[in-house]
Image 1 (cartoon, rainbow, N blue to C red):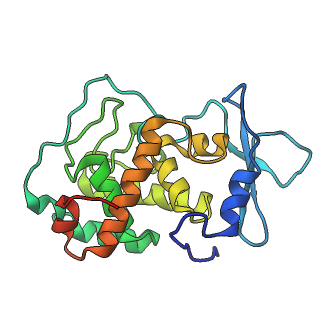
Image 2 (cartoon, rainbow, N blue to C red; image 1 turned 135 degrees about the horizontal axis):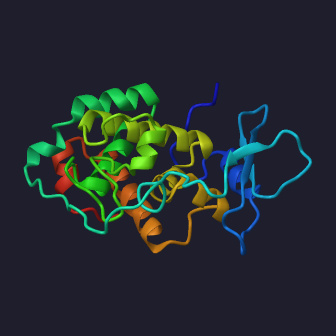
Image 3 (cartoon, helix red, strand yellow; image 1 turned 135 degrees about the vertical axis):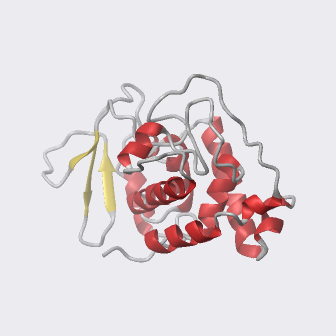
Length: 231
């Protein structure tokens, strides 16, 4: 069993071990990624082949690697932006958010922050790259997560939180790497040895982190979702 997550940046020594084992990639970004978990539950990654039999293939170089924006499929370039303006939308999915958070042991405030930034709580939202629903899952990622109906709000929430759980396990509870992986795919985070140098992903990490802090400090969900969000 893994040790409980601590949701602050670089809070676990293992968080550094994850990225430290990955060499900088200046050439072929399609190289396979290998991993193993040591006796302390720390996950180690490398994109270099070695004779160490403990390392097994984690992600093939030609695999999409998940993510809600860059990996896992392609859209038609025409999105459907969030259009629901009712304040009730911020509490409409409370039961499912709570259930999924409890089941996968992901902070409810983080789930809300992801939903807020991804879709502004509108399940009809579709990104130009084809990500859909409250948690903006790419179709290929949804398939990987065994989501049968990507447009069903409950299934979308459970699939998205399941993906956050996978990412949190992969990055030993590092909040920023988990959030970056949700946007860009875990393969991109592993390959770059940290938050990928994509402006969109870096901005995404900042936004989700700010809303996460806001949901943790403001008890009223509607107020936390609509108020200004300075640091």
